[in-house]
Figure: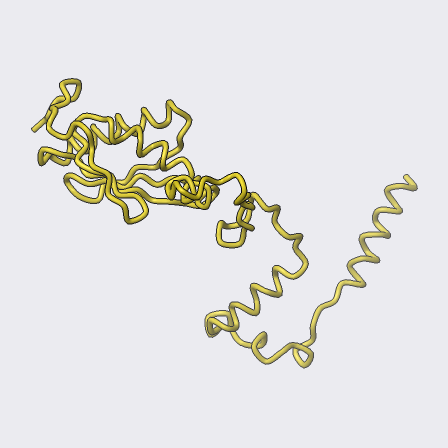
Length: 186
């Protein structure tokens, strides 16, 4: 019973100490109706809301706020520009453009890129796939260093015309071979 009484007194005491602004004490922007707030007022309100929060852990912050991983330049082979690019893109989002050969339909492009994406996932390379044209797709990698391994896998695939990665175009090795495993549906 004493604990219950103690809790009630504690709640009453803390509610008495909580501060409520009078209209005279509020800043001018806070006296406005929320519908009349400008972008600057909303930003101030957001900053006021966030000021008491704990900072997010490093892995939960958006990518642009994270610290880039440190790169040991001594272990890099500077004569191989692809390995240098691969090391600098670690932990960053990267996009790769893929073109399917033989003027395929959109359905065929969807099916081929789905198979290629599954092959990448089987090799523990996480890539999101987005079709942008009847014969083109974007593969987006959350860890950009995986894109070069994916590029090596993709250029070996049948019916791949080319891969564009970091402004470099890599031609597929078998663009004219028709993949028999995939049916062209009309």
